[in-house]
Image (cartoon, rainbow, N blue to C red):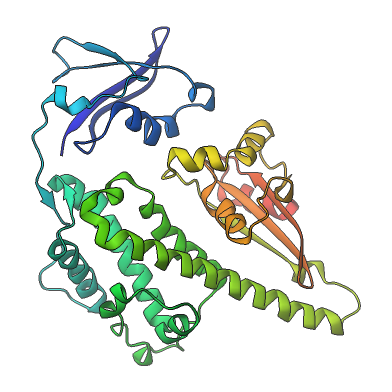
Length: 342
């Protein structure tokens, strides 16, 4: 896989300096800054016009190009790696989960998929296969039949179920939860947005992968709605609303995999959170799209930083959703105390 050295500077001040950064061969300089560099620079620089200098090596004469003029950087760097690879796993798996990962890797290979370069396959590709195996294992352990009857799992993934054997667990069979389904959905949908998944070699997979992620998100919303209804019934029997029962809090980690389209689509709340101080709650309902699915995506795809989110329900109505920016330098004790105070 081609690698490049990247240095971003302004008035002789180096903003970022990466050495040996792996990139796919067909990546354009414009896309590179949109998908990678911008995520690590201050928003003040997002609309800036960068001058990009590059060469086949750090010691060669540098050639200048404007970022607004999209070119194929690797035509000039003369990168040569076009071979497709899949991640390597132990050929003698020790358990059913390891066997699932190995089978998924071979499945990608047999369908003509893969990543350009062995390093990319064993880093990015291995994480993708591991995450997909984790999602399939979770669904298999909880109940494939339940999810399939309600939302119809893509046939593409059928061969990978029936492997977890939850009846052999020492503890009771795990149940689907709204929070866990949201996280599993996020794992899958993040990959659907990446450039390499948009390549023709993954045409056989990306539509089914997106659909699978969507139904996990829908089931999460369904279970959340069921919980609200249960609370409504409970509240109908109890005259006074218990605020502790009606509220729930979640922590979302920074999502660095967002593509530029989603950055622009869901930028309003991010900009607001950039303006306020750490730990200061912001009312999400003032920014949230009206459509139910978009509102769900808005919560899980938006943030470039770690945030806390509090939801308050009274009966079936979602009365309030507040979000605050968490100080990345705070320790666990401070985070717990601050969140509890909010």
